[in-house]
Length: 123
Image (tube, rainbow, N blue to C red; front, top):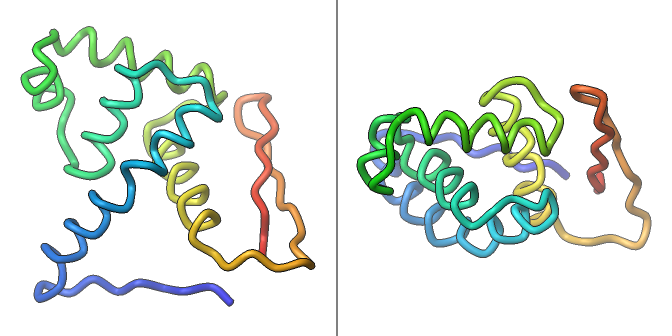
């Protein structure tokens, strides 16, 4: 069964803390799966967990904004997607899948983006 999460003002900050704590190991797994570099993983984590802009990521990582854009472009090429929204969507789908209880009768859902086939277990 799918779980929907509704975020209200009361639990918004608590939710952010949960996501940051919970996403660390998951982003590492996601990065390994898609062969992202440590710097690409760091940038993805900052954007996904903190909502940082390219400029904020650049300041945090002590690199230029142009370098951040190059890292983002490289991530999207490796994964075979064309937008940051699709990158976050794929990250979210993988996260949700990793949190779902594993069942013996799982089936796989696949989709194609940018000529690359992606496969996610559906429960």
